[in-house]
Length: 385
Image (tube, rainbow, N blue to C red; front, top):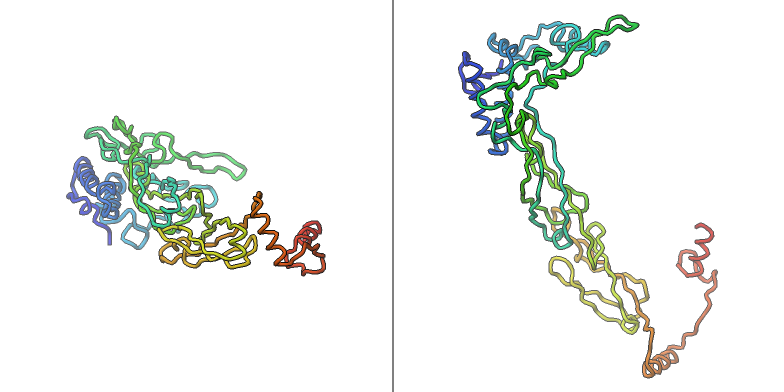
């Protein structure tokens, strides 16, 4: 069944071009996504109806009871031998032409009203903002609906007219000679740039484009646990399309600022703790403030060696959309004092005598290759292992 394009715009079948245009402009103001985000589908229907009824050829099909946008057997008049599936597809394949108007006919005008493109902006968050989630104000510079012509691109009550160069086809056909004979080529109309229409009296503010560039401030909600390079999508906040078409989406890409204390690895956090040699030998507990206002207790066991890593479960970053947290990895840097007073020197000498360990040269064969001895590491490095 053919669609009711007149009913979509709320006009009678015998409405004049001016009445159709006024009806469309009124509905476009009410339904445009920048004004009414919930009416995007309705806005597209109204825009499609206007494109059909403002085209004399398409309107004649509608008045005859057909649907110019329907394929064969779907309520339109599909008997065109040069249409989809007919001889036109053969000529499209061999000569670059198509259906809809005879040999070499192109795709027809693309229309002035088209969907807008997506836009991308970046936002930088620190570790606490990522852990808690944040609401950030961002400044975007995109094309927005022209408030002077509401997207029509025309000034006052003027209307677009059929392009005199391409006669509304949006394309220019030319015949060229080749070794195959005469070949029909099709290119975009240089006058209307494929729209099929020109605007003799364009809007002074947007120059006939139906949109202008504007800088605006938006608030974006960043969920907790996002990672570097992730994007948050804001539907319909991107570039408004030519002719006041529906806007594309806006993507906000997250960057993570370097932290003075922690290094992030997925949901885990890594930090370095300097431990005096006495505490490493005797053992101790260290409290480390982490994200989300929590404190992790790092237990240093007696006899801890330099380079040891202590893992504290559940004190890392929150996992996106689950709330579970990763782990904290504390890398222990055992600090040997550089200067000792006489009392400290005497005490260490007593400790050395009590322990009884002697300096020893470790042979390469006394440890397995994977044990990590210094000599083994050097030997493997030079051997290219």
